[in-house]
Length: 251
Length: 96
Image (cartoon, rainbow over all chains, first blue to last red):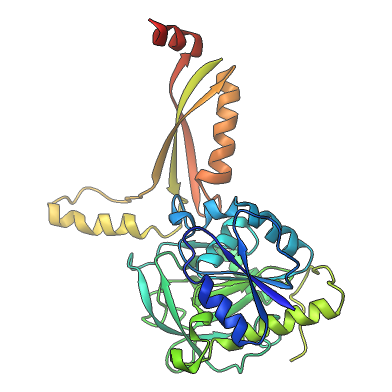
């Protein structure tokens, strides 16, 4: 099995993502933005960085690149796609995950370690998580998750909120001005998935905490979850995505 | 064919937090300005479209504004015609 990592002009976490996939014991394949051919990979990571210079709005120009045609078709066919940081912005601009990422409430670029907690451990992207807070870096200027109240209610109801920023005591940093909420995200949302549950995005960088030598390997909980889900999807003969409440997966 | 020059003004949707607007507003007391409120910061694009009619050109601009220049989840836009020039006139102008 192989997992692909897209490189856009301006991606900067593509190599970290390729490394994290390798650390998980899976062959990592680099995918170039100019080709819609995903080379038969079993899952796709859209990495962090500043695709196309983040001109106009972060992620919007990347949305129209040839590789995103392939990624959209792959997602529609039930393949798993994980967008990290700028990759999350690309997915949001593409409408592949709900909501939008606004300028950080502080107006400052935020670069630090944050704590996030998986909302559920039965999703394709959190199944290998322990459930404890995961400490991972953020590095972004536009990470303030935003959607209207009706959408936020629906996301919570349907299990599409995957991660929230949490305070040192492990409770969600719901107040946008809470120092543990690094960008003012509504309802402390750090990551969401689509209705079918096979496309997810988050602002923090799990791939940058992939080995003890980098500080911790806590981020591997997410990468391993993706690997498990991709393997299961392949073993099941690539079943299409299902609508409705996000499917629960076996731990 | 004529050339139509448009401006697309994009602003944060009402109700969407606009930290830039808020920062500008908070700076106003330093300028001793107390009569200004509700500052919203957006962006403006200007572009020229070649088309048979203004309506056809406006359709192109509206499509781009919706699809690319704004994100309808968080922004609203207005389209403004700045100038219309006949292409034949400008070609003659270039030749003279």
